[in-house]
Image (cartoon, rainbow, N blue to C red; front, side, top):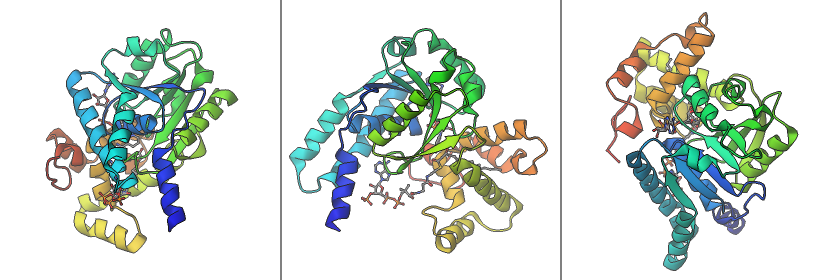
Amino acid sequence: MAFATGMIRRAFSMSTTNQAVKHVTVIGGGLMGAGIAQVAAQTGHNVTVVDVSEDVLKKSKDSIKKSLERVAKKQNPEDEKARANFMTETMSRLSMNTNVEDVAKSTDLVIEAIVENLDIKKKLFSSIDSIAPEHTIFASNTSSIPIKEIASATKRLDRFGGLHFFNPVPVMKLVEVIRTPETSDTTFSTLAEFGKAMGKTTVEAKDTPGFIVNRLLVPYMMEAVRMLERGDASAKDIDTAMKLGAGYPMGPIQLSDYVGLDTCQFIVKGWHEKHPDNPLFNPCPLLDKLVSEGKLGMKSGEGFYKYNKL
Ligand SMILES: CCCCCCCCCCCCCC(=O)CC(=O)SCCNC(=O)CCNC(=O)[C@H](O)C(C)(C)COP(=O)(O)OP(=O)(O)OC[C@H]1O[C@@H](n2cnc3c(N)ncnc32)[C@H](O)[C@@H]1OP(=O)(O)O
Ligand SMILES: NC(=O)C1=CN([C@@H]2O[C@H](COP(=O)(O)OP(=O)(O)OC[C@H]3O[C@@H](n4cnc5c(N)ncnc54)[C@H](O)[C@@H]3O)[C@@H](O)[C@H]2O)C=CC1
């Protein structure tokens, strides 16, 4: 037990900055960007979060602070001073900016975590490709878009890969490191080392649809929503069944709300466009209705379920 506690402490308090990656730019300060930035800062990296408005960045900073407080409490339940130091040190490594060109000028690694839309992601990478230093590595946190297609907007195919984190980033221990046929060995190993320096276990994945986890997880979640749509079982019963019958920490309907229904919709739409003959990826009227009503899941206070506003 003492050993396990020691391991947990090390994972949270580690300050093993990856030598090749000292400054990280995280583009997108939403659910994932905030989590990635938090853990990168926690593990000794200097991090700048870029998003479209000061308001979004303020919310992002607030959510990082809240999450860090949970980590600090777990790390040092009895020591208030250590908790305060941890907060101050971590927050001092974190900055916010709305001007991506300014930040991209001097950074070692860009991790993109913006909306799940190929055109928007390509536009973003194309806008910073000629600005970022030669050595800078670009990575996308996409859930479902081929890395090669995103990378095609740039001239640094050898310095482009995928770093796929899991939600909530401060808790989930895995990072998938994705290489395209053009990703160089140096880029791949730098990304993998960076994932490890963040305290994560890394796995290597090829640039195939859904990589490893989502190739298996997305069809499962889609089947669950189809089951609900057909009226074969209630949301609550589907979730209870998968938690108690299959040992998942969350049921698939609750997990859809946790991921964000807008993100789920982008994934379904993208896969439907690529595989129009697969009925699993057909548009889902129930999902479309919820999104059109602004019910985006936990982050908006309502999705398949209702939540207390954060
Ligand atoms: C046809 C239509 C189809 C529609 C559907 C289409 C679906 C397509 C979707 C595809 C999605 C793909 C997304 C993706 O790319 C990959 C993903 O990330 S998938 C998501 C993976 N994540 C999970 O599966 C999460 C599963 N859930 C859990 O592990 C737990 O429930 C969770 C840890 C979230 C919460 O645990 P719980 O015990 O319920 O709650 P607690 O509040 O007690 O937390 C436990 C523990 O963790 C700490 N903690 C939680 N959140 C944070 C945080 N943000 N920051 C810091 N710490 C956090 C908390 O403090 C607790 O610590 P203790 O020490 O135990 O007190
Ligand atoms: N939500 C999840 O569980 C997971 C999501 N992902 C992927 O991570 C990415 C982000 O997802 P979330 O964080 O959930 O989305 P989100 O909707 O919470 O956040 C996206 C953020 O990107 C910002 N943004 C949009 N366009 C931008 C631009 N051009 N420049 C700067 N900022 C911009 C938005 O303002 C928003 O704050 C997506 O590609 C998603 O597929 C990956 C793993 C898990």
